[in-house]
Amino acid sequence: MVEFVFTPETTLTVLAFLFAGVALGTCSGLVPGLHANNFALLLAGFAPAIPAQPLYVGVAMLAAGVVHTFLDIVPALALGVPDPTMAPTALPGHRLVLEGRGREALRLSALGSLLAVGFAIPLALPVTKGMGWLYPLVVANLSVVLGGVCFLLIMTERTTRARLGAALVVGASGALGVLTLDVPTGGLLPAGSMLAPLFAGLFGAPVLIEAIGGAGVPEQADPAVTTTRRFILAAGLLGTLSGAVVGYLPGISSAIAAAAALAVLPAYGPRAFVITSSGVNTANTVFALFALVSLGQPRTGVLVALERTQVPLRLPVLLCTVAVAAGAGFLLVLALGDRYLAAVGSVNTTVLSLSVLGLLCVLVFGFTGLVGVGVFAVATLVGLLPARFGTRRMTCMGVLLVPLAL
Image 1 (spheres, helix red, strand yellow):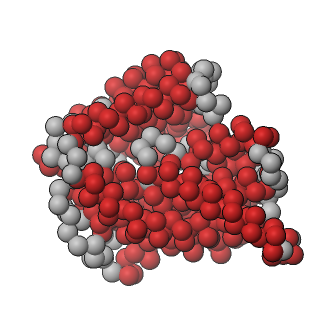
Image 2: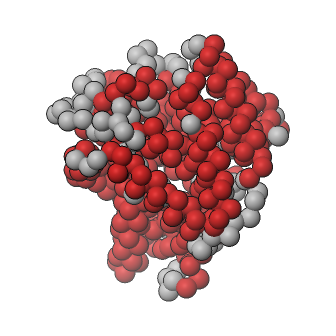
Image 3: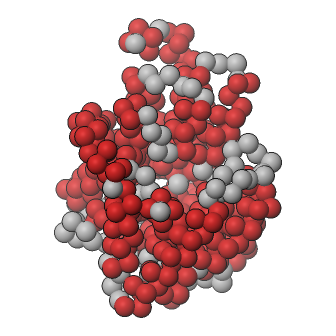
C-alpha cells in the first residue's frame, strides 16, 4: 500500500486527478444548484470511457466532494439574502450577512470544515468500531429513531404557531418524498435522481423567491473573527461528532445534526451554527468513507458513485486525498469568498434571484426532465411554508425522514 502511494509516477497521476477534482468541487461549490454529487454521478456514468484506473477517478470524485463542502457556504451566504425586515426568518448565515459580518461567516465556516477533517481522521477508527456495534440496533429500530427525530423537529420550535407549521411542513414534505422519490427520471444527463428537484425546490428556490425585491447583500465589515478559539474548537468538535451520526445513519441531514448538537452549546447563535453545520458537512465525508469500508453502506452521493465505479477502497490514498483537498478548500474560501460577496452585492437582487431560479430550472430539466420540473414546482410551494409559519427550514427534511421511517 505505502509503496503504491509513494511511487513517483503513480503519485503524480493521483495528484493530477486530485486537483482535477478540486477544480470540479470549486465549480459545484460556487454555482448555485450544482452539487459535487452530480459531478460524481456523472463521472460514474462516464467512468468506463475514461482511460484511467478506477482509483484515480475515485480520487477526483472524493476531492470534488470535499472541496464542495468548503465552498458551498459562499453562494449560500451571497445568494438569497432576504430583506432586513425578514431577518427573523433568515437562515443563521444570512443573519450574519445582514449584520455586515458575512466575511467573518466565511472564515468561521472554513475553520469549522478544516477542524472537522483534523478531528475526524484520528476519531474515525474508534467511532467506526463503536458504530459497528450500535448500527444493527439502530437499523432494527430505524422507524422509531426517525419518528423521534420528526417529533423533536416539531416540538423544539419556540411557539405554538411554529410547531403547527413544523408539523404541516414535515407532513407535506414527507408525503412529497413518499410520492416522488422512486419516480424514474428522464433527464438528458445520466446522473439524475428525484433528489435534485426535491432539494432545489424545498431549500433553494424558496430562499431566492423570498429575496426578490429585497435589499440584497449589504456592505460587509472587516473579516475579523470575533469569537474565541475555545468556542471555535468546541463548535468544530461538536460538528465533527455530529458528522459521525450523519455519516452512519440514513435520513439524518447535516442541518438536523447541527441543530441537535447546538442544544448542548452554552452560547447558541448564528456563528455557532455556521461552524457546526460546516463541520458536520465535511466530517460526514470522512466518516461516510469509513462506513462504506466497514459496513458496505454508501451514505453520500459521492460514495455511491465510488461504489458504482468499483473504486478500490485504499484508505491511505483516499485519506490523503481528503487532507489535501481540505487544505485546498480552505484556501479557496479565503481567496474567492470575499470577491463573491462583493460581486453579488453589486447586482440587482431581483435580477439575480430570477436568473438563479432560471438556472435551477435548467439544471433540474437536464437531470430529471419534465417530470422533475413538475416535482421542483410542487417542492417549491412546500418550501415556502416555513417562512409563513416562522418555523425552521430544516423541517423540510421530512422529505427523507418520513419515507425512510415508513
